[in-house]
Image (tube, rainbow, N blue to C red; front, side, top):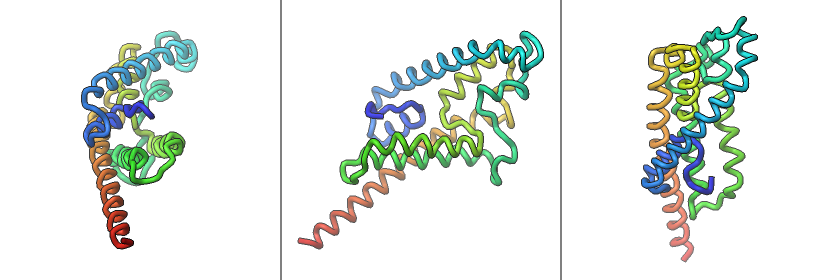
Length: 200
């Protein structure tokens, strides 16, 4: 949190686009985020492989409807009353506003409240819609599952547009949300300046 890079690529990109993070740091942060996600996905799959064999009914049997759901964020039809393409937009707009506000020098917000509020906000939305809120995690998991024998279906679960949407829409949402947060911050600052001038 204090590094400014966070553990989510879209947050890193969003903060860089608003000048809250140096663009020079972005490649290193993205590489570390993906490497960490890939290592975690590989370790989780290796640890649970015996249990997967038992669940699927035999060694080497791997099916997306069967056990892939334990590792990847799978689109759940009917989980929400609106189209699933819109869901990734929500958490990142909320996240960017919170993060920009937390880093503001003009708005008194306890920075230690953000690491508590932000994961809760994203986790609730993730559980409700079962959508990815971290492209690094989703990409790493799909790579591991594809290599482990689940096949190309891990890339098209729910729709052929699943993967592009979970990445592209969240990145654009992060950029939009970050700029929205900056706009709210500037509006608050302008209001504060007007109040100070009126008090003089």
